[in-house]
Length: 310
Image 1 (cartoon, rainbow, N blue to C red):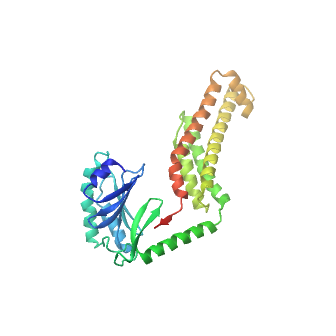
Image 2: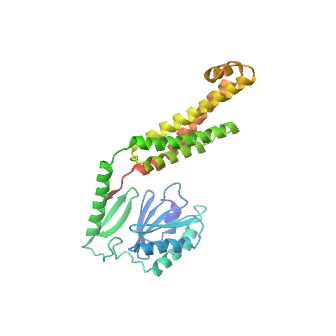
Image 3: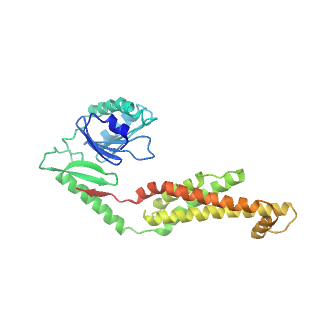
């Protein structure tokens, strides 16, 4: 966990493991996740609230319009991201934002950690247990019956996922649409004389989004399919672009060669063209690989199944 986050929470009893924290703030059970790429850590406040009050919390907090702060909710309570422009500025920001969170919770009469955030029943030593939900290492103290209900729901989701068809063909269509969109961006920037990282980024995330939207089962196959399709389609579009450019150049200079013949003729007679051609493909290939690796963490999260541990 980031040292500045630990410093900000020094007045509270928290335990930390890697980018996760668990403890209590003013009587509320709180989980913290500080993932790279976020503007700031996520604070999960466990509390039993009906859907209307969870909605009210999100509206009231977001209406405060605090910079780099955003509220949401889950089945166990409310979630607040507290961001700061710099790591050094986080402790001050946290101490400014926390009272506003607690005020809204108090206004909504949100129960504290003596009430199960799932069932709304009182928690005692002999009727409760703490479960850990992965991915995320988020801990919740629940009544025994609520804990078993959560486990049963997760197990059913696993069974439904295992029984669901893979729909690779439909999913591939989504991946292909994303790759074509990336290819179009690549071609546009190529004609403008630029090489861009935006194209593979769009191809990967649009493709995987549509893969799932079209019914593809998010597995490791999705990631491999995304990488190979993005690589082949974008490089293929780049190759076709070179063929078109070379064909037009040949026509302007009185040659009748087209396609690959025009490309080979250009390579033969235009100094430096071959180096530019190879360099263009090499750079685009490297960019696609780098973006895919950069996106891998996010993609792996999409295929991770929820697990519940005692």
